[in-house]
Image 1 (spheres, rainbow, N blue to C red):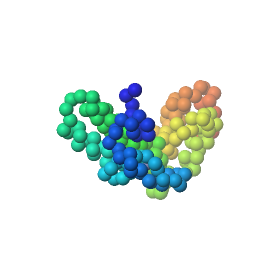
Image 2 (cartoon, rainbow, N blue to C red):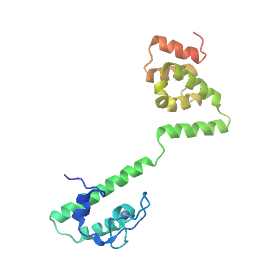
Image 3 (tube, rainbow, N blue to C red):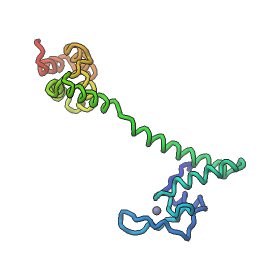
Length: 180
Ligand SMILES: [Zn+2]
C-alpha cells in the first residue's frame, strides 16, 4: 500500500531513475558483488550508500515539482526517510536505566555508596520478584545512593512499585536486614 521500503522490488521498480546497466558491486555478506541497480551519482545501490544521494535527488526534484502523483510520491518517500531517522535518533540518548547506573558508578568511585549497598537491594528484590529485577534496577540504584530517603522509605517505595503483598513485604524487609 503506502509503504515503500528500499529493499522492496516495488521500490526499485518505481524509482525508474536507477541505472539498471550499472550494478552496485558492493561486497555482500556472502562475499559476492551486489547486483542491485546503482544510483548513478554514487555508483551504489540504495542499500550500499546510494540512499543519501537518492534522498538529495528527491529533495531537488521536490523543489521544482508540480502538484501531482509524482510529487505525492516524493513527499511520502521523504517523510518515511525522516521517520526512520527519528527512530534512529531515539536509540542514541541514554535511557533512564543507563542514567541511574552511570550515576551510581560515579557515586561508588567518589565513595558515596558501595557495591555492597546495591547488592543488598538486588538480593532482596531477587527473593520476591526475580523477573522484575531489570525493571527495578533504576530504583535500586537510587536507593543505594540514598536518593529515595531513609532505607525504610526506599523499601516501601520499591515494594509499592513491585506490587508486593504483605507477606512479600515482610520477606523483602527481612532480606534487607530491617527489624520486624
Ligand atoms: Zn548494493
